[in-house]
Length: 417
Ligand SMILES: Cc1cc2nc3c(=O)[nH]c(=O)nc-3n(C[C@H](O)[C@H](O)[C@H](O)COP(=O)(O)OP(=O)(O)OC[C@H]3O[C@@H](n4cnc5c(N)ncnc54)[C@H](O)[C@@H]3O)c2cc1C
Image (cartoon, rainbow, N blue to C red; front, top):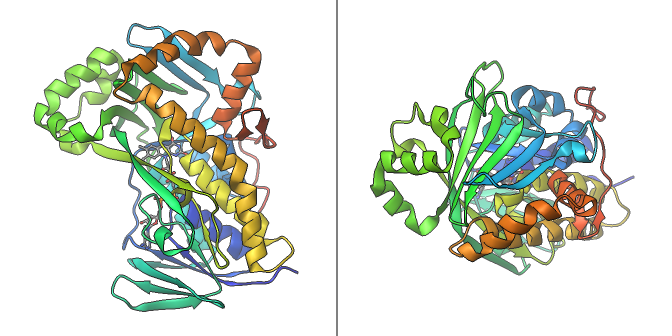
């Protein structure tokens, strides 16, 4: 029988919460430390892929999130002039496959509620700032130097801006992308092209302008207000100039790129209502030491170009659970976790690193191959299959993938407490 450990999880985002639920169910003793004192549903929309939904299904949360989000069947991108660039659908692989547009906060709350149902101790408002790995334990201290406990094993899941990543003995390279996005959340239009759409739609003008629309369902259980997230690509160094330009100037730019933005912009009164999101690229060769494992954005943040970050974070949790059930001591199990994640993470990190400048950069010339080649090559059945498999979140290499597990949309969960 696998040994049971006293485990601390730092960060209660997708990665930390999912890992805690898996490991609590496996019989370990869990404590979560979360920096935010009063976690609430905040954030814009994200696209969940079949890979991430598979994890939520295993955790018994799929029904909850399906009730909150909006099913997405297709990804469609075109140039300002209306030339199609991307048009791929989940059903190209499996009639029952789908993505889910959901509020990041709604996903967070679904996981947070599940953590509480499992009676996992969550200490909110605790900012862990020091991690000392000893031969037989890991010692954690908060930002005031107060001892928070000694643990057999610590899961570091404190997000892209992790302060703990540099305290473990693994080399990492962290770069901030020069481009990011502005997000606006508005009521889903009741008429027009964005009404009741099951599509993530994007419009591009060379590499310097991009607007996108993602239907995301409701922000919390019981709400009747269906929402759409709109995103606008921006170079981070130009944010102040953009703000000085004012709301009307930006509204005109957005409408010139896509008139479909009109109903979403109606209730917007100030640029301050928008959220700015920067992206990071985090590279590590391995994701464990003898007594720590690093999960989610802390381990492998990437640009959201492929819409995979939260899905990979959830998959980390699933694979850590698998690794902890393998034969061997703790260090061997954690090594198994890193080995198991290697190919999946390498593929998506490389793909998002290569794709991002083609959609967001100062080099308009990069849009030429995108605008002329993407659509014709996506009609070649083999290439199309690779593109859809990439979208599904199951690729492990250019010509390899993990097993795709079809999800019955509303069947009871496979794994319960
Ligand atoms: C603009 C944008 C769009 C995106 N779109 C998508 C998408 O479409 N699909 C997708 O799958 N992903 C998307 N992502 C990525 C996705 O949001 C992240 O990959 C995912 O949230 C990572 O989860 P995580 O648990 O690793 O980190 P986080 O969600 O960041 O959670 C980390 C947690 O740790 C806590 N914490 C931090 N420091 C400490 C500390 N010192 N002590 C205690 N607690 C701490 C934080 O408060 C937080 O709750 C997008 C990201 C961005 C920026």
